[in-house]
Length: 103
Image (cartoon, rainbow, N blue to C red; front, side, top):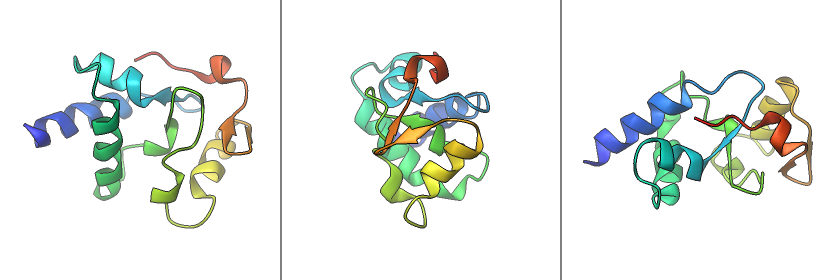
């Protein structure tokens, strides 16, 4: 079950457009497990071996970079998002609604 869940998470995350972000909860809802936002986080934490999964584009519902400590280096998640034109201030996505992608 877990591998299947993780795979479904990865399939959604791969669809997030460049320059957009989404949330753990939005992904959980999309895959039919609306109360499993935390499990989506676990799946993304385990996605390191999948280079084609842009986990940096997933933030919490308030726009916080809650997964940043899972990326190598101190600010890699922030740097990746800023390279895509997303402004980050105090570990939070600015203009959240402008950048939000609904899966």
